[in-house]
Length: 283
Image 1 (tube, one colour):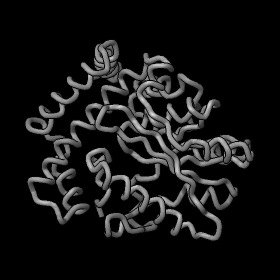
Image 2 (image 1 turned 180 degrees about the horizontal axis):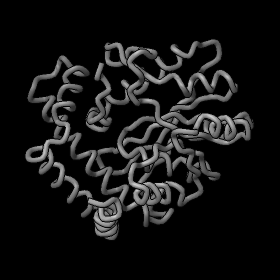
Image 3 (image 1 turned 30 degrees about the horizontal axis):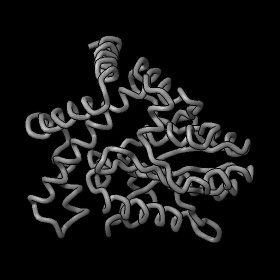
Image 4 (image 1 turned 60 degrees about the vertical axis):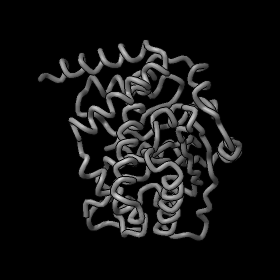
């Protein structure tokens, strides 16, 4: 299948789900989740393995229940991303309850640049766009380039609709330094699996490979870090909140460990919303 044909199929789904009311599109997502979970179990073994490692105290039935809910969370995120290409700023604000964001405004005013560090949690794409909206001046988002050029353009258009800018993974380090030096806010996720030979910290009690990049650049530039999280609540509204992060006097390893502790705490509160499809414990 050509990449353009793949994009046409992608765009057809995006348009079809994007014009539906949010409640209906989420119901469709829930049905699709059950279909994939039972009949097209993409990376299901990875999900169950990861959940078993993270929650050894839970029964197999409890693990499978979380896994099923996780597929539902992922599908809801996907249909919401399709909708994000067309939603208005007022609709976006209506989907989110922003909490404790004053720390972001106050820190950004100091002009030293700022790292907003999040994770692949709930609808992280919505979270990054929303942080740009709620801060009022947009953020520079670190984003991986999609293999399909047309989908990559679509995704970046969606991400930048309300003033954000994209820093593509690849030649990104120089651009990150440039943005921070200019006093901008740089948003990124920090929960990707690191290299086999790289730094390891504890995550759910297990030694886990992480990338030290954000902590390392923050130390070199003196830019502060704030963690922020978006979580889907029971009523379907998202909570968006930020937490100050003390980095002074800490090593790169200590900063990464604190980040993973915070992420683990969040996951224990909403266990189905982290991206368990990611093989974080591959080695």
